[in-house]
Structures are given as structure tokens and as C-alpha cells.
Image 1 (spheres, one colour):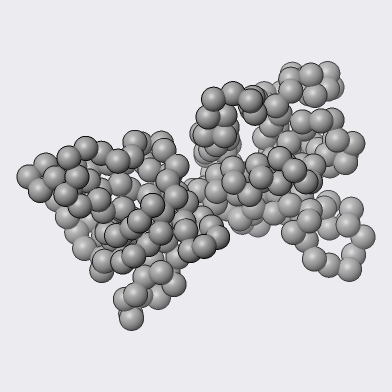
Image 2: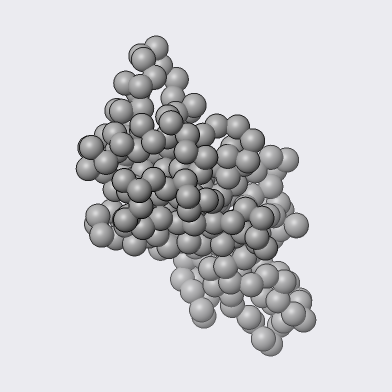
Length: 237
């Protein structure tokens, strides 16, 4: 078993957006790397690569919306290999009767903030499954977007009342390349990164909110009254 999550799903359109904007950050939040069939570059028959990827994956996510025959074929392989599979769909009728008895994550892509809801439910399900498998959850770097922006979920807020500063803990860590300490070669085991919002009367973000931001400065690692081994991140949105 390797440190990645294999995603079985159709390609193109909204499915690519879901993979890149929801599945990928949720998987990396668990300390795993996402892998989809179109990410595999080899000269072997593709079905051989897919079977090997399913066999080696720590976890499999199957997006069954649309009853894509390739998806159902690959889902069948995952079940035959006795892999842990999280089934996801936007249409309950797309879950065939052969495995409708299994739990699945449902989303309504026309609902209000459906993407945030799907992200939360998928993360919660993965956390439960990985815990049952005794696979440690180690958050990876914060998702790096285009144009120098990053994306991360806020998991905790600290308000420094006497100064009016707000600090927002990121669910994950900035890549080491963003940290300017000349001697930084690895993260500390309990290191955390916080968006520093100086001199604010009101909080800008909420716990659970997904934030896109650009880094302007990262502090050295320090210990504060509310947390040890933390870095403050100056940012713009």
C-alpha cells in the first residue's frame, strides 16, 4: 500500500473541476496524494496501470454520477481487491442496486454552497476510514493554485484581544519553498501555519471556511501563548 488515493471518475467538464477543486485538496488534507487514470504516464496497457493503482492505493474514491461504464468496471475491480472505497454521487439513482446497500456521499451540484458541503463530508468520511485502517493523517502542503495563490481551510481562530489581531490556523502547511529560513529543511512534527490578520475589529473568516490567499511574508517559527511551533503568514486575498 502506498501513500496515495486513487480516484475513479469520468473525465471532462464539471468532473475535472470537482477533481481539482474538491477531491484534490480534501485528499491532501489527509496527507495523501491524489491520483486519477489520466495522471498515469506509462507504456503499459491502461487497464493494467489502473488495476495496479487500485491495488496499491491507501484508499479509493469512486464518483459514480452518470453511471459511466468504465467507472463501474473499475469500482468492481476495487471491490474484488477488497479495497476501502468511498462512493460519491450527485444522483442517488446512479447507485446500482448491486451496491446500493453501501453508504455513499451524496451532493447536489445545484444547491447552495454544495462544493463546501461535499468537501466537508468527503473529508469527514476519509478521516473515519483512514482511522479504521490505522493510517496516520498527516496534512500535506496547502494547495497551490494559479497566479501565486494558495487555498486552505481554516480550522481554528485565535483572537489577540488587547491588540485586535486575528490568527487563522490553516489545515495544512505552506510548502517549504515558501519559507525563507535558510536552515529550514523539514517541518517540525507539530508545526502549524496561521494567517495573521493585524489590527482588525472583526474576524474576516470562519472555522471551516475555504480561503484563497497570496503570501507576502512568512515569519520564523515561534511559540506563543496559544500555540507552540507556529509561523505567522502575512497575506492578501
